[in-house]
Image (cartoon, rainbow, N blue to C red; front, side):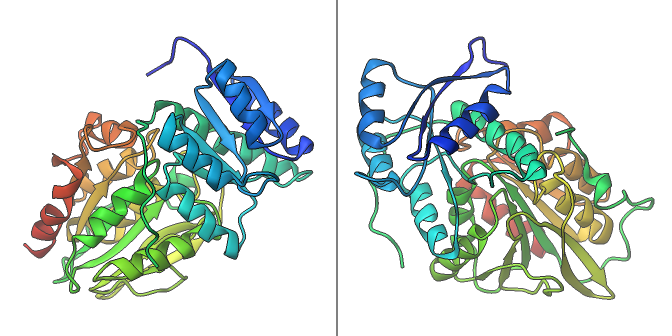
Length: 358
């Protein structure tokens, strides 16, 4: 759905270089304009009183008040969609994970200055993140105590299979794709699963270094084991593998063994990892042994791959509009006729299990 007005963005970052770089990136998109910029949260608060932006981009580490504290104040008092843009490290990713818990719509990695290819990819990722945030449903959040370029298709990573599903085995697998709002949706989904659930492979649009912390957090909350996928990891019962940020994850099969292949490559459907890549590989190597789940997120990543899964005999579920933060990805899959059932978030796990065990 096209917006009639441009998305007005307030950039909050203590670095003048970063503010200018983000301004250049965002204004390259005709749907976005810069409302203003601020060097710290206090300046930002004054600007917000004068004119409320549609989206705020916010750094984590700033003087006077850190970005997480400012995010909490925004989301508890006057919610505005916020995109956290930070230089993520192993340590910093834990802070970024807390930002999502406190209501950030998206979190992405700060562009590296002077690397042309990285900046070009960042334009796509950052502009899409801001547009997704502008479309997201924001609500007041009371923080809970912490628990411990051209749009490419999956063809650039994996050719479409020429035949239908391979010989059926006794094992079924579940593949899941999510984006904006997906961190919470995945928590609800995985917490609902028993310890002996069928093997699961997940693509959640995330930056590099962030998925390991996310998987670790979920592993402490869920009965299934959750880990960041490594190349050649076997897909086994009772374990969920999450594609590592900035790498594609493919489901492969050797005899009766399912495993994952982790690959570099260009953005596919504007993302890396891409849901389309995972779903295409599931269509090719699992076919009717697969159950597909597509969750909240902006855009159409996963819709093509999910249709290929259905054509190969898989059973597919989409999250409904009411429980989706952004209904883009599920809706695109539904419109393509790729989905067998549309369900609210809290009912997806039970249905996926029923179909995987049938």
